[in-house]
Image (cartoon, rainbow, N blue to C red):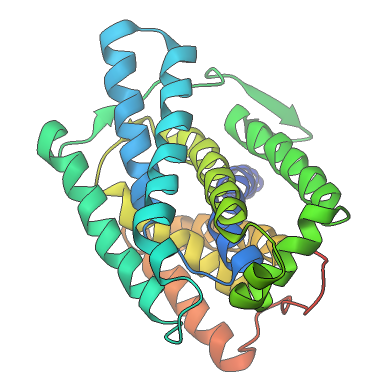
Amino acid sequence: MSSQLLASTIAVALSLGGLYALLAVGFTAAYHMLGEANLAFGDTIGLATVFSAVVYAATRNLPLAVAVALAAAMAASLLVDHLVVGPLRGGADRLAPIIATVGAALVLRNLTLAPFGADDRSFPPVLGTGSVVVGSTALDTTALGAAVLLAVVGAATSLLFHRRWGRALVAVRDDPLGAALTGIPVRRLAAYVYACAGLVGACGGVLLAAHVRSAGAGAGWRITLLAFTAAIIGGGSLRGAAAGGVILGTLDAVAQVMIGSSWADAFGLMALVTLILLRPDGIRRVAVSSRP
């Protein structure tokens, strides 16, 4: 591999790794803090980015378009929590909420397809088209944006888990019914978690759409797949999910160079299956504690 090709691969790996890490953290938030897997996550992001693309095409107002994406993702996430997961939370069947989110994903996807169609829409470069040169590697501005957002999310999470709300979230995750009986506002805490997960996911989704210059309803399932894979690689913790996203982005970049972009997703899934066989708990197993 030539030095130029190596530098290009590193740049793509860092860009995709940061974006996948941000999406993985958003997906993992509900699982790590509430013990719930929201498989409608990607379709809430797909809906939000399509809305954003439509608003930008109509107004050419980039800040407004980004704000619409963030608001739409948070609203959709809250609806999933309130209408789909919330009524099933704390029940004997822990699988029911997960299956319900699959139905929610289909509803959200069709709500996106019905008015806007299946064609991808052009998405603007949110952070510009420039790059930052580090050594011999030119990094996309979206990679730097994802890195900054990851740092902010990490700091906020660490602060949260050292406060009363963080301890309450641990109680809700371990025993929702018992937490409710002690006076912890389970529904309100869950709503906060889903809203924050939607916000973080929307940030990652907007940057990813800006990176590939397009947004479409079909991106939802791929976002869920990427975030879920990274979360599994990371073992279900927030820090592990971020690391899993970077690993998955690196594998994706290498696969694009070695076997082509059309097989990149399959390469990532094969890596996931291999990891599950060799290390079922992931690279960083979730600890039963108040740490993120």
